[in-house]
Length: 450
Ligand SMILES: Cc1ncc(COP(=O)(O)O)c(C=O)c1O
Image 1 (cartoon, protein in one colour):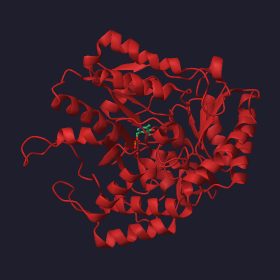
Image 2 (cartoon, rainbow, N blue to C red; image 1 turned 45 degrees about the horizontal axis):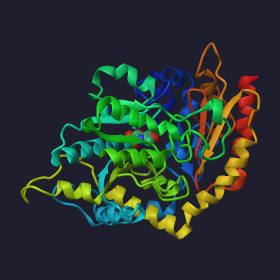
Image 3 (tube, rainbow, N blue to C red; image 1 turned 90 degrees about the vertical axis):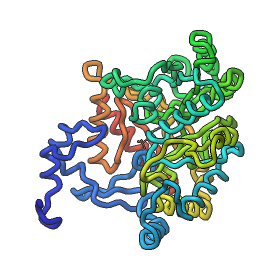
Image 4 (tube, rainbow, N blue to C red; image 1 turned 60 degrees about the vertical axis):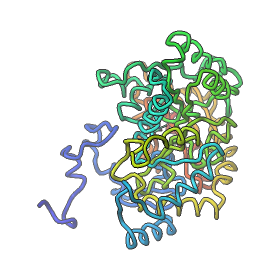
């Protein structure tokens, strides 16, 4: 079937469109397929088919903070594949997975000490929403069916995550499939009052009071959970105003509503702490995670769950399945082995502290561009930042794509959503690499907005 690997021409095949790429302007790729093929990666650099070494400005898709090709991860993967490559996760499990659950629970805020594994962030979100529904039902409050998300939120592409998500282009094609009864808080981005903020904006905590308004509108007895990203990642590093998350926590507690932090991006050190919950000092009832848990090497996600929520499920007849949910690859041994290796490396190389120590370097570098022509806003926290570029009024999003293409020619693998460029470089980056990355990006922005 087909050509042998040695005579296969991936660029020619990519140009045909047989491979339908995710979240991609496919027709644009088909015009220049050669530049879109990454053939190898090492450390903070990806190597393309046409010979460029691209600095990985978003750590893959926020998922490879330890860099590519880490020898200890490769060794762990190899050893696990030889020992136990797969085992059913239903009624059986394996030592690597159990150990990883223990270690993740130990990293998390104290009350969150149970872990349910999935294969992605989208599955983690849908799982958390189901746990919320099940929890309320088991406690005799099945009427709490409403889920509250937030504008500009990204919670993956399952129907649950899409419904609570707040990115219009992702939602509108699938409007007919949305969950019932979902409502949204306003987002906290305030370009008029808080543009060019460093870290958390001082103003805006009162936007959490939107939840009180929704409680007034729907009645608390119909609301099961609120889900937010502590820092909104996909729509461009929207940092919570000081006090905002505390306020959301208080309102949820007062009304018996579960608070879910979607930490698929912020989990595992991006903000210099294991989870954003610790960085901000706010403990939710559940945390969803994915991506960096395995450094992106093997897909894995999961949900951290508060002890009493777990215990609520552990009722009924002993031989019953308490939570009729799970995936063929939940707790996959290869993913778990890699997850354990990641935590070993993080501990031995103190990488969360390293991410924290690079925060001021990135902050200085990006805010050096403040109020440059063509830049509308710059935000940052932890080892993450975003730059909003003034859109071309005739073609919003076009400048973002242009900058992405220019990045490929200037040794940067960029992530642009619309006209926003997000940066989340690897924790192993050097300060000079961060400065160079922002310096090149600044020149590219000047080129396209001139
Ligand atoms: C906050 C958040 N939740 C969920 C997801 C979905 O994760 P996945 O793409 O692994 O399904 C993402 C992906 O970027 C995310 O940023």
